[in-house]
Length: 245
Image (cartoon, rainbow, N blue to C red; front, side, top):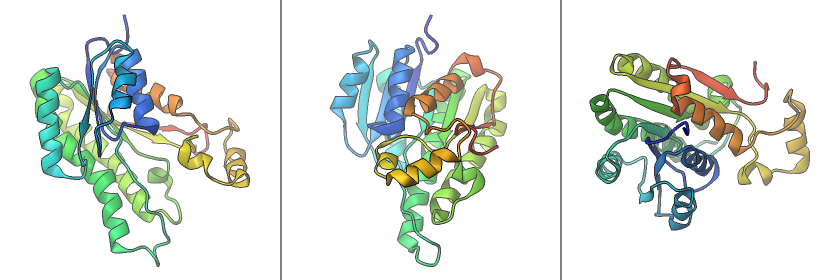
């Protein structure tokens, strides 16, 4: 039997990158997939559905409370349940603190952190009625260790970790688990655009001597979404090749 057979996963910001990789992995393990992005993405929807599960794309600004509530209710109506929530929506607007604008700060906190509050707030009542669920917040190693030039991003990711731990404590008696994944240097379109010497310097700091793949993150998310991790809650797992120990 597949690890996520019969479960429904809701993944925010999953039209591309890590979110899409998680959606495809979950689907391969039998989960039906609802995913959001700023616009409906029929191409990704078809790619997921080709794996033999139900898939539907929803247009939603995850930072908007009312839109998030409406999407969750629609997903519940369309799929019947929400067993897994992955808060993956995120942006970067990097800059040193002395030059960072209020808009840069507010935008990153809204998309990265408030969006997770929005979707958890809407999904928890559904999961409580089901007497179970798994919530996964996509954080970052910079949320654990900080990073110069990314105060807004690091603060938002640290917030996601504390949010997961708090929800784990609140919702544990209802059978709901909450955890965070903190990716390190992952090979994505964004990191592949970096100069080769910068990428090489990064990899030299990693004991495994390579960047991670989106599949590495998706595999960890699958573990946390499945019953294999039924006694794992309130944890932050660094998927970084040993870069931070």
